[in-house]
Length: 68
Image 1 (cartoon, rainbow, N blue to C red):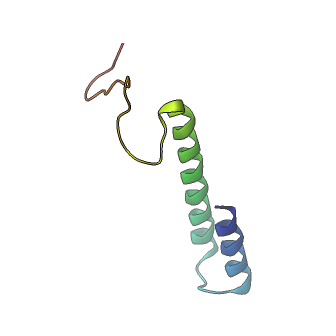
Image 2 (cartoon, rainbow, N blue to C red):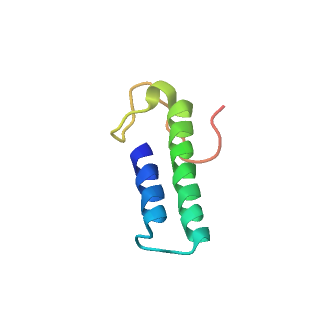
């Protein structure tokens, strides 16, 4: 992830695939927001997080409303 950020900054400073500066910073912002969202999701899921999608034994599946 961090390599992507470095490459993006290097491309911008070298003038490769030039875009307006606002588009560059918007892209960097979206990339950082995606990283933060992923890390937050992993923290919230805790032990239920895995790289493969599935339901683990003992895990409640909520298909509508709230679980209390």
